[in-house]
Length: 135
Image (cartoon, rainbow, N blue to C red):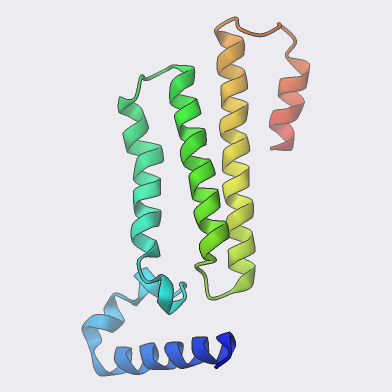
């Protein structure tokens, strides 16, 4: 069985189960954009978001180490998104990878600004400002 046929069959089964049970239908927003084999991906996504927003507050606040740890988390998430391809739509798979790369470079930019504010790098600001505009 080809992968497209298997996906169509799995989506058909999911649709029929949602029609039979209204409680499943009410939770559909959690998994409807993911392939059936990736039913767990919303849990991963929630943990990723909590890690980037809630956990980092407790990890050496205001230091470059905090930004570096967020970059490690972003890099790990990029690898998961690239390896799993969790979305039904190939466009969403590609778009999510672009979003993860953008987030990584935003953290990289934050690290550059943090290093400048700590006096670890030269005083030129022009390159940083143009890099920030590009991001």
